[in-house]
Length: 498
Ligand SMILES: Cc1cc2nc3c(=O)[nH]c(=O)nc-3n(C[C@H](O)[C@H](O)[C@H](O)COP(=O)(O)OP(=O)(O)OC[C@H]3O[C@@H](n4cnc5c(N)ncnc54)[C@H](O)[C@@H]3O)c2cc1C
Image (cartoon, rainbow, N blue to C red; front, side):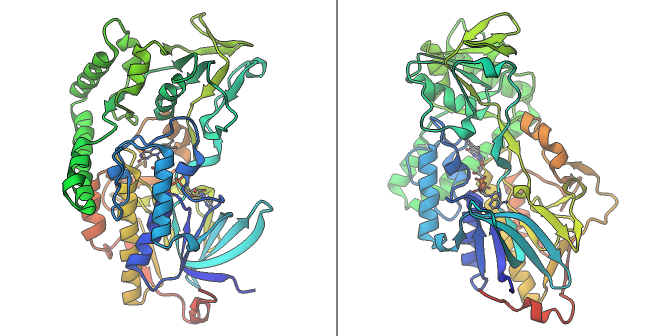
């Protein structure tokens, strides 16, 4: 049977996949496309994570789409509100019928002869094999493993009489009201969970090996809410988005260029929030500079307030072992617990775990170099939506989607079937793709492609530069090589179905 063919197959129906669909519909109206989603629901991250207090840790005016205003008064929003925004976006833009749920993509092989991808899919719980073809593959599969969280071994865990939960797999039957909870970790998830659990737990301890930089920001953006009262929603949103983009860039640059000043400013905020007598040096002063790892944000200082109110304590120590009744620390202290939450992070996964082959040769990601942070050297007609690590994910994904549409239109106008980034400039030095020193990035470095030392192989992590390059830069920049399919492949190119 001839496999069903699409001009574009999008993998993933999270923020970036839904955004990709809206951009494709608006900018490439003639193209056939479908979204292949491994799960049975859309929303990705915002549907998967169900732990108490789940929320964004960047503002929704930049995490929201460029094309659809975020109109809720909360700038830092809860997971259910973000999921509702994604569902409404998909419904309003007619994206839902394009999504094929329960379609997990396992492999994609490119044939230069026919200038198309053959995509292998496992459908539904029975993993029924399905084969589709497409001319362009747009991978919007996020960056982490949905099946596994990062769970370092906890020696003695089998003896613990309570329950041990990883936040990625939180279920409705996890009980914490009136109980003693220890949350292991102090990253974005831990600082979200701790104040939320502390509302009803008898006590919560945040146990960290080392501190994280934590900044308090207002949950509501007063300027955004004022603008929305007097201006049309779209204009108010655009102005707030720009304000937050520029503020974010300024704070990031300040941390990178004047780390001592940034540290002093952050610590002053923490000291003020926690009051006198708290050991800020030990528990809230990391050894690394702000933004060498992702900065953690707490809305209206909720974490600090819970600590000050005595409902939460912070312990900086190492685990020796789990006991029947809690956690024994290297210092000899014992933390009693009824529930242990291992907020120890994510397991990264690149390209949705896809095995990719080009003309029969398997692509080894670490041997490729990212082109404009969205394509891979030597891999034709494939783009990936990878957001910023120092700003909201969607800012970059929106630009990537726009660029992919420009690229598709450029190829159609000139009769090209394939585009392939080629790195043959010997002056481009390879560098690690992600500069962050966070644990989850370090653990996964060997899985990533590289980046190059200069344009268009360099990842700037800078919205203003990317906007210039991706929106206004030349598509035909010399590094992206265009070609036509071999004569005789015309038959293969004709759609079998739309
Ligand atoms: C708890 C939490 C909070 C976060 N908060 C923020 C924040 O405030 N700001 C920010 O910028 N970022 C945040 N992030 C990062 C966040 O993941 C991104 O912002 C964004 O949600 C990623 O969207 P995405 O669509 O690219 O990926 P995801 O949300 O991960 O969606 C990917 C989709 O692709 C599907 N998929 C994956 N592989 C395959 C495959 N092989 N076949 C078929 N389908 C596949 C998945 O099932 C999923 O539905 C947060 C992450 C977490 C975990």
